[in-house]
Image 1 (cartoon, helix red, strand yellow):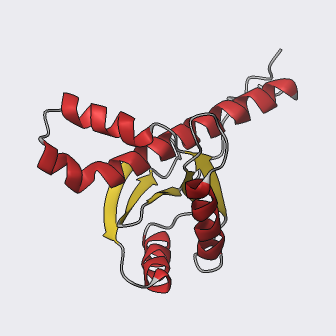
Image 2 (cartoon, rainbow, N blue to C red):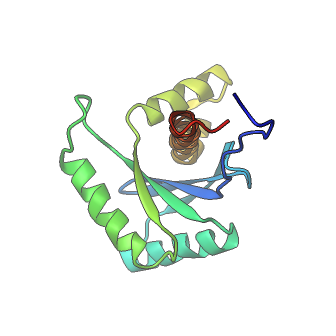
Length: 161
């Protein structure tokens, strides 16, 4: 039984990050935390500190409340070398961005992004230019959907509308 109040999941402005060795894909959510959109691709410099400062500037510019870093787990769900490297970098990033940093499973995001771009008719050269930020958007959208579903499940368990 409900009291007539609509159940609302608190919105959150999130920045999604797909870390790569040469490029970093960046996506951002809308203000309500519902839709993820590809934002930009940062080309790695020779300095992690410089790269992290650029990401921190985006966090401020986009008024993000949380940063979600893709966690490249192995197909069987274990954390291999790539996941350990991403975790280390996410910890470093957390010291400079000024908002919480979370990690989220990014398995299949690049494949999903590539497939969507092929279906949209982009050629290989065009796909290479945007695949990182599109993969970041796919990962961030999955995080937003998971967050929304988890929040809804938790509120149902508590008997909230």
